[in-house]
Amino acid sequence: GKPSLPRKVNSNQSSPKGQVRAAAYNIAVLGAAGGIGQPLSLLLKMSPLVASLNLYDIANVKGVAADLSHCNTPAQVSAFTGFAELPDSLKNVDLIIIPAGVPRKPGMTRDDLFKINAGIVRTLVEAAAEHAPNAWINIISNPVNSTVPIAAEVLKQKGVYNPRKLFGVTTLDVVRANTFVAQKKNLRLIDVDVPVLGGHAGITILPLLSKTRPAVEFSPEEIEELTVRIQNGGTEVVEAKAGAGSATLSMAYAAARFAESCIRALDGDESVYECSFVQSEVTELPFFASRVKLCKEGVEAFINADLNGLTDYEQTALEALKPELKASIEKGINFVKQSL
Ligand code: NAD
Ligand code: LMR
Image (tube, rainbow, N blue to C red; front, side, top):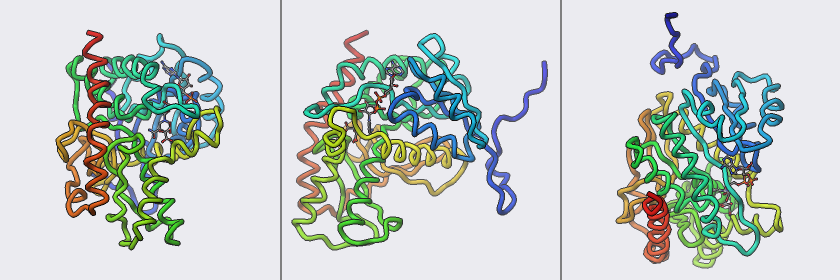
């Protein structure tokens, strides 16, 4: 047959100064026609590192793909509509991003979405296991505290689980924490970085304000106010949208940042750190969001140091979140085990 051309840029070949690196990575967005999926796909289309963008949804994805494909950036956009086209959407992809599922309405918890979204995530990850077993997976669909363990369990059953490549996207919690802290303390936004640990729902969201960089002093009142606002950021948007859904634009921004970090790590950048909800060793819980260092193979290391020297407030919050997070993790695992 024809000799095949190397698909990826060798990351050891650094590009000439001033030139943008060639597009090299293939991404599938599952749920691409949704509130998050559309702006996320736009942001990914703007990345010079993305070679192809496969947009999958159960409906309405053709128009989104046609629209996006007119942007004069390198990524080749393709539409895949309906379950029969799911396998093709996953061929040769390096990264699968999953925002498929229903969003909250006022009065609901993220766990109220489990009934519908658990099955959606299970089905999509089953397909990922079969058609893209080596891809990195970013899970956005809520409840993240359960959907990531669901994904892990599905991948295990299919014999292709690599815990280093499965990520729950909690970047929006970090984005919110950075924004709210910068506003409160009059800091330059670009400088502020707050690690957010634990999970992605209510009190399981644990902002470590004492670890804010640059170092900032907070009064006890400020800590309480900022912590509660970060934990309720999602609800703040759900209520403002008054029945029309939850965060989509800030989420797309956060997911694009996280995806870009994944691709940069894949591309050989050795200085990529992000908070993410992953299979974890930093506490006794099997999954936990913490800062991780990424490398070409996925998670390279956990930044355990973030958990040293916590304030009493943070230590109490950490202990308080564990039972709820543990229950959400077990609920996800049992969902897959029981359906065997
Ligand atoms: P949306 O309803 O606007 O879009 C969801 C999309 O998923 C729709 O286009 C729908 O057709 C599609 N979909 C449904 N079932 C599908 C299936 N089986 N296969 C493929 N696609 C399917 O919702 P949204 O606002 O985009 O939110 C999506 C999810 O993201 C929700 O579960 C929401 O709670 C979650 N979310 C997570 C975070 C986070 O921080 N991790 C932030 C915001 C929202
Ligand atoms: C968020 O944090 O905005 C998302 O998890 C959506 C939600 O339901 O709050």
